[in-house]
Length: 173
Image (cartoon, rainbow, N blue to C red; front, side, top):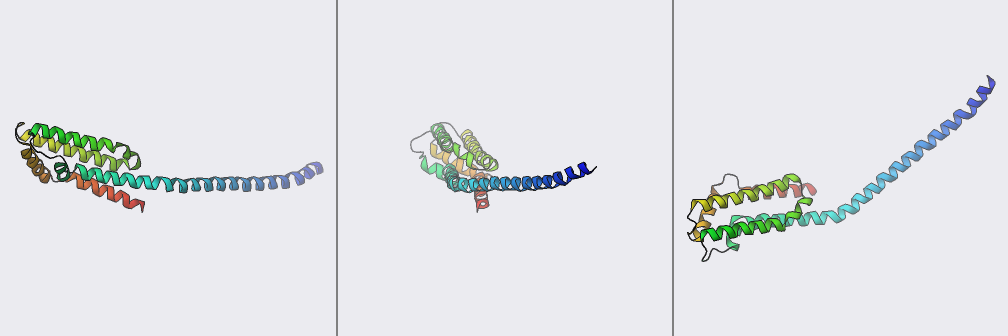
């Protein structure tokens, strides 16, 4: 019995020292890992934040450029038929959207879907307007019809998308 007692007198303190050293070492490793992750996030945010802000700027510009008021000024209806003007407007919207397609990786899925929805809504307004007039009518008539239909829309989707963009930017700061 005394041999067991002697073994326990040596083993128990050794186990306590080992357990204490293990717990301290484990905490040190976890804290070091957390510190490295924090440093990585700080470094990463210094690089990503400017890119995200640039993406928001480009998407705001996209929404502004595809709004009917801006779009109809940039694509002049001079000497075009309504059909040709219709195609040019859709082409312009498609080009603007494709040019900014990569910006979706920097914004939330909700914002991106809102912007896509705004574009699709605008395309449907343009298509609806084109159906309501003769294909060979002057482009100026289509232009007026687009403005009328856009104003008649209850939900100004471009404005909604812009507000969602501003709300998301507000979350960053």
